[in-house]
Amino acid sequence: METLLAGRVALVTGASQGIGEAIARALYREGAKVAFLSRDAGKLDTLVAELGGGALAVAGDVTKADSLAAAIGRVESELGPIDIAVNNAGGLRSSTGELFRAFEDVPDEDWQATWELNVMSAVRVARAVLPGMTNRGWGRIINISSESAVQPDPVAVEYGTSKGALNTLTKALAKAYAGRNVLVNVVSPAYVDTPILRELLAQQEGAETLSPDALAAHFLSAFRPNIGLGRPCRPEDVAEAVVFLASERASFITGTNLRVDGGSVTTL
Image (cartoon, rainbow, N blue to C red; front, side, top):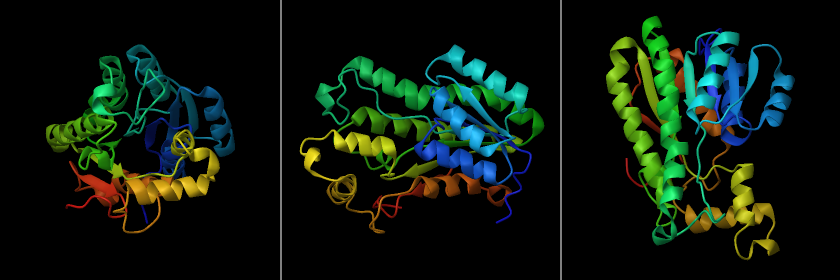
C-alpha cells in the first residue's frame, strides 16, 4: 500500500515497548521520520540504535507539561515540524499497586492520575502540534483508546471513563480542524498481548501455577469472550491501523473510531 509518508515527521508517545513501539516502527518503515517518546531513555536508545537515521529517542513524561513541552521542542528542532502525532501513552495509575479495583476502592488521586495520563497528555500534545499543522494545511492526530471506552468493564472504571473522554476529545477536535485538513481519529484495540499486560496477569491470584500463554488464554476466555477471532490483538495489528489513518489513503476519514478488536464490541 502506498502511504506517501516519506519525509513526514511523526511523534509517538509511550513508544518504548508494546503498542507504541510497534506503531513507531511501522511509521518508520513507511519512510516517516519518527520520534520515539517515553520516560525510559535506556530502552529508547536501544530501539533507535537498531533503526538508524530518521529515528529519534526523546525522553519525556507526558503527564508533566514542562517535560512534554521540552520533548516536543527537541523533536521539532532535530526532525522538523510534527505532521503526525500518535497519543499512545496511557494506562492505569494506582497508589496501591492493585489495578483492577472496584469503583468504591479507587481514591480521588488515582482517578486524577489516570485521567492525567490518558486525557490531559493528549490534550497537551494536540495543543502543541495543532498550530503548525493548521498553518501547513496538513496534519494527523491519532489517539489510542480502548474498547473499554464504549463497552466498559465493572472494574477499573477510572480507566474506561478516561478513554471515553479521549474519544469525545477526538470527535471534537476532528470537527474543529477538518476545514484545515487536520484529521483526528481514534484507534480502539481490545486485549492487546503486550509485555505490560502479561506482567499484570502474572500478578493475579493463582497465576503462579500457570504459564504466560495459559494466563493469556484464560484472560481471553474470561474477560474478552466476544473476540470472535479467538486470539488476542497483536501490537502490530494496531500499528497497521495507525499507518492507514496517517496515510493519504485515509484523506477523507476524520472523527472516526477504528476498532481493532476482533469483534469484541457487540454493537456497531
